[in-house]
Length: 500
Image 1 (tube, rainbow, N blue to C red):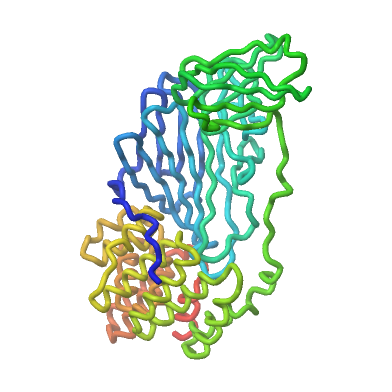
Image 2: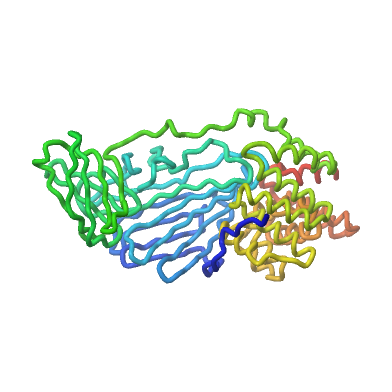
């Protein structure tokens, strides 16, 4: 059975962007994305006003990659990078639509490790002290309101140290090779009142002093219907005509009871909003980490990977095949089997194993990439594999290295800057694949571009295995003079240094 392509249509034009600044704007909004100082997204009204800022997105000194996708109706800008300690690839996406006064801000985490790893929330700072409510969080200043709206069934906004931390309602640990995402919509509202409900398209504000209810629309909504459910059990309805520049306004006095829920339907009857008023806690829907993960090192997947690293392929594959029956880890076990097949140059089997992994987890860009790599080794190629990987992870370091190895030149890797982490992460995966020649090319590029003791040491070991003693000695001299960024902790690094 063939895995379905998650991107059967043409991939939007995507520009890897070397500039440290990106700008997306329409007649309502201006959004600035910066790759400097850990990365940041700054959004503000086009006519001026205080900005909401998501920052820092990464640790200072780490490489922040950027890309831009532009279409006729929208623009999407991306920032992303890799946390070398946890193995988490993070991506922030800002989406600006031509006819919308709202910014859709998405936060995606991918665990590139073969073991569970902790994720991190999106840090969002509003222009003033934030308050939590049913739709997310908001702040008021100078007669306007900034609202971060999210679906609290699947995400949560936590207020801490002046920031709104937005994260998915998921276990603290992210499973291996899995993606976790959450999004919020930023609204800049000029209508007075206190937000009581919000979603991607509307913000509902209540002004108790004036006895008014106002509905701000991010998009032009000339004709719709609004239904209010009252605490008395009654429901009242009215026509809705709302615009980004002008909110719809209703009088609450005389209803007999305060409203507790709002429903907005389009002319065709589609529910555009259905939300309660006030704050609701959904803590009961938090998922939990499987109990067996407390003994992760004893599971067949972890044991099989250890044997694979040590070179015991047949015993490793036996355990990894057993791991394909572990609920929730099938995709990781098949991915590991694909690595084992690549190590023994069984390219067709490797491609089949990666495809089986994708049946369980189609959002893994590394599986799409390595499936394509394996098929190319035998002169075959699926035209959808690489586009799928790029669509899922436009800032994935392996895809930058793919372009470099395909003859794109070292300029392709300039965005990595002086950060050794992207080079080390890609080199580690190539070690697992058994692709030593390509791994040495990556290490050589990293040693040339950065001043990291670990990179130089690994490059020296590779040169010495090739009998290039003078070059190896020069890399060892550079390693002695360079600073150690982080202690070796990836499997390939530990095995190489241990066997040196």
